[in-house]
Length: 99
Image (cartoon, rainbow, N blue to C red; front, top):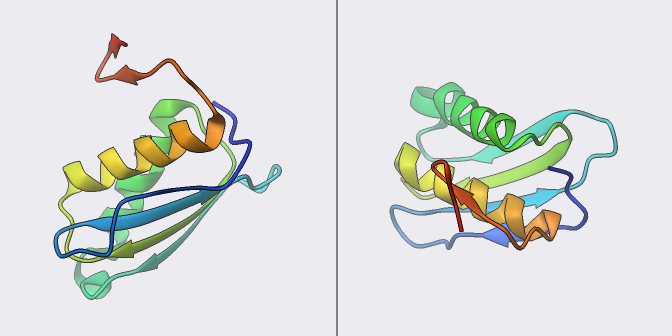
C-alpha cells in the first residue's frame, strides 16, 4: 500500500488515539508519539503502529500519534483507517476478509 496524501483517524477523547499518516518519500517509517504513558508503553505502542503498517504493506510513512490511553486494538484500528484514507484505497481487508 502506498500513501498518497495525509489522513487522520481517531479523536482526542479518553481511551482513544489520534493518528495522522503522511507519505514519507522513501524515508521509511518515522513515528512521533505523544502519550502520558510513553515511558512505560512507548516502545510497545511504536511496535504496534509499525507492525500494523507492515501488515498493510506500507513501507514509507510519517506517523504522528497522540495517545489518550488507547488499547492496542484501538491503535491498530486507527492506524488501519488512516492508512486506507491516506492511500485512497476503496477496497478494505479487515482481518483477512475483503469488503
